Image (cartoon, rainbow, N blue to C red; front, side, top):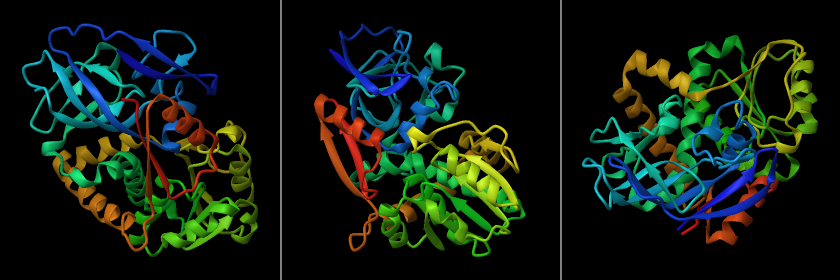
Length: 361
C-alpha cells in the first residue's frame, strides 16, 4: 500500500493523503522505497511555479486540479524487474511526497540512471537522474540529512553564481538578494565571497536579520523596509528568491542602474505576482539546468561535477560546523507529522536554521 501527499494546485494549503495498492511492476521497472526527503522553501517554489515550469508533470496524480510536490532525498530499491538495478541499492534523487514510487531505469552507468518513464521523457534530465550513492562524489553516509536539505539548493546557488560571473555581473558592482535567510540565497552569497569586487546586500525580515548577519556571507543585511539605505545610483543586479511582487517593483523603481533582474524562487507565496510593466530590465526567470547544460558543453560533465562537488564539501563543512552551525535538522515521521511540516513550511516564518527532513514510512 502506497500513501501520497497531494495538494490542490490552486490552493496550496489544501492537502489530502491518498492511499492506493502497489501496482505490479512491468519488465524493466523498479519499486523504490522513499526513505527520507527534505522540505524547504524550494519545494514551495516548485509548487508555486508548477504549471509554468512543468513541476507537476514529474509525478502526475491523474486527477485534474491536484498535484504532488517534488522533493529531494534518498530511496532504496525494494523490488526490481530490471537486470541493471539490484534490490537493496540506495540512490539519491527526485521523489514524490510518498512512501514509494515506481521508476523505469534507462541509460544506466556506474553512477546512476535516468527514469525513462514516458511522461518524463521531455522533462529535464537534471530532475530525472538518480545517483547511486556508492559512486556519488557528493555522498557521505553521516550527512544524508544535510545532503537532502542543501544539495539541490546548493546546485542552484552554485550555478547562479557561475551564471553571474560568466556574464561579468552585467557590469554591476552590487548584488541585491531577497529572502536572504533562504538556503538557496545564502548558498549563492557564500559562493560570491570569491568575488571581492562585488558587494552582496541581503534583504530579509526583521526577525531573520540577526541570523543572516551571523552567516558572514553578506556585506550588508537590511530589512525590506530599509531599501533606501542602498544608494539609488548603485549599479546592481537583483537576484529574487522571494518572488514578492511589491518588493520587486520597489527595486526596479528605485535603482536606475539596475543591470539585470532574475527570479529564482517564490518564498513569499502570499505576495507572488507578475513582473509586467516594470521599469528597467525585464525580470527573467533563472533556470539552473540551462546554465549547467552550457557549462557541460564547455568543460564536460566530469569536470563540472568535480568543481561542484569540491565546493559542495567546503560549503557543507561550513554549514555543519559544530561550533557555529548554520543548520539544525528536524525530523518528521508519519503522515500526520509530514502534513503538519508541509503546512508549516508553506506558511513561512520558520526559524531559518531549521531544516526539515521527512519520511512517510
